[in-house]
Length: 183
Image (cartoon, rainbow, N blue to C red; front, top):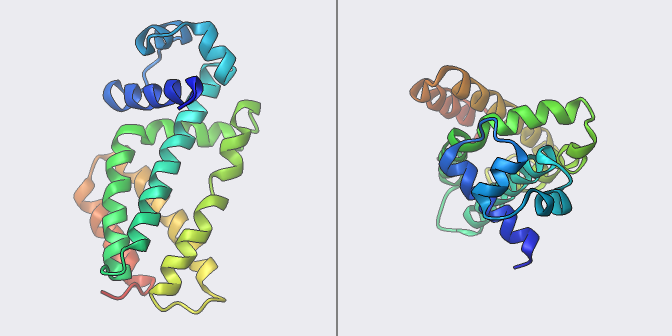
């Protein structure tokens, strides 16, 4: 593991444990056991570090989805439901950061360019595969994937805004039924 990868992993763990808060780059460096100059060297800025944390968490979620898709013993509906719960758990830790940085990416902030480029595109292929496994025709599956991604993110936003996990889980279950994920 490179020094950059170690710092990024430490930052992901730190934010998972302590939340994002309004830490300065110097305070983050102290918490991570490094100097603010090393963080600037590897990530450019505090915002650059935060964008990389979101990318890393998103990659962990895509890896989780890939692992679930590889488990042939699970139905597409079970794969989807297990993935939903893992994403909700990650959202409770990193969700506010995700939405904050997503908004900054939509404003074309330079340090969010790598994040902006991956917010949607990297999710479409595995989600398309999930929908095709569920019986959605291949020509329609990409549209289902985009709809599912957008709706799921809306439900995650709802969860962060309201804290009502039961209602959001109920809506997610309905969404799964509406987009024909058979049990």
